[in-house]
Structures are given as structure tokens and as C-alpha cells.
Length: 120
Image 1 (tube, one colour):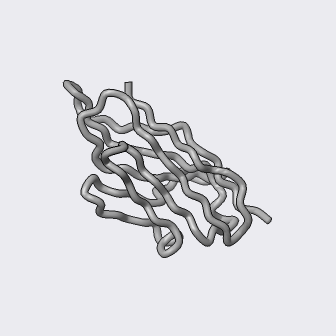
Image 2: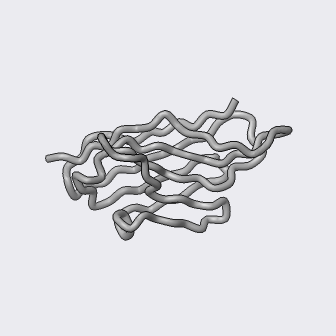
């Protein structure tokens, strides 16, 4: 069974930094596109950033220049470096990945989420 586990969330002051990690475990043949989503209270979940297996990245406009997504394919792990954090970045951050398992069709998986709070 495939699992995605996020870590690294917490409370930080405006202007501060956090680094989120998402580790995939289980029987997997390959992990394709991975992404970070977030959902603030009362708002819809939105894509923050995504990264292909080859390293091509995409960001939502509000985080460009502040957040950096990366991955280590050997460790089945994805990261989100968040700098210059703003109160509006406060949300639950979710890891998402398209994973191909042995003998099964490619499927999409979600992590359980990690809380990021930006406040003074």
C-alpha cells in the first residue's frame, strides 16, 4: 500500500521560512508528477507547485520567487522550501503524487496534510 507522509509544518512569523517534506513509501514502480496543494479555512484547495519526474516545475503566481519545489527520486521524497512567508500562506499543505505500482494502473495519492501557520 502506498503512503504519502508530509512533515515540516508549524508556526512561523511573517518573513520566516519553512521546509516541507513529503515521503512516499510502499511498493512502487515509479512516481510521476508530484505536487503541493494547500487549503485555507473557507477556501478551495489550490495547487501551489508541481514537479515532474524530470524536474520541470510549475508554481501558482502568488508563491513565485518565494517557494521552491524539488524532489529526490532516489529517496522518493519531495520538498517545498518556503521563504518570505506571509499570513496569507496559512493553510493545510497536502502532498499529491501520481504513482505507478507493479501490476496496477497509475493512481493519484494524497498525504494527510501538514499545518502551516504564519502569524506574529
